[in-house]
Image (cartoon, rainbow, N blue to C red):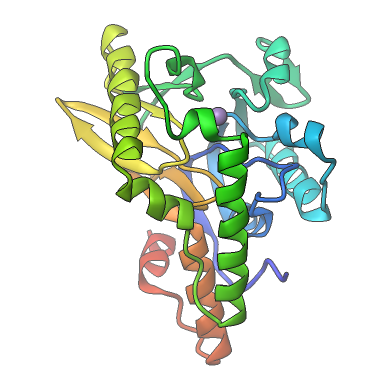
Length: 277
Ligand SMILES: [Mn+2]
């Protein structure tokens, strides 16, 4: 698939990505590649589950696009972007290298970030909270048969929708927001993440792990989940003024494609505004 669908670049202070699951057939690498090719940032945080070693152990899947994603990240690191990699549970083998550098990429167990407007945020993948949270629906199922089945259905829904020219839509995100157990699990995860930020006297947290993108304030603390590139195709960004925003890249990707198809050179308004900043 042609990744470069429109002109224009996005310049932001910080980007957070997680749960890319390279090496799994559910990874939407072409959307991520398009995003990486358009974005410029001072710091890029990779918050875990970047390569899915669990999926690779089951079946070796490594299309060119997955390799290109790693190359795009390394290219950023080599051209001045500070890249920090915080491994997750699907790439926990990389935790052996915590404290070391992989070329220009720094590997850390967890870290913190200060936004341009002075907020101190705790950054980690999120699986450390599994022990405190009864994640009976999501976390335990990511990587197991029930989740694989859901993703299999998701793939067919996506293929059918694409064949019909319909925009990308995440079945599993739909299920998660409508099933009570899943909603409870998400709420419990958020609560545990914010408790950890509070315990350390920080202003909030950025994590991934549960594949549920969100920015929310609770009791004066900020909870950000950067989502994933399996279901929601989202990145969390920090604008130059310190404002945080979730980008649903698959939506943007398709709206640009439609504009191109209609020979219209006008960019969709939200991105055009950001590019103008
Ligand atoms: Mn995870």
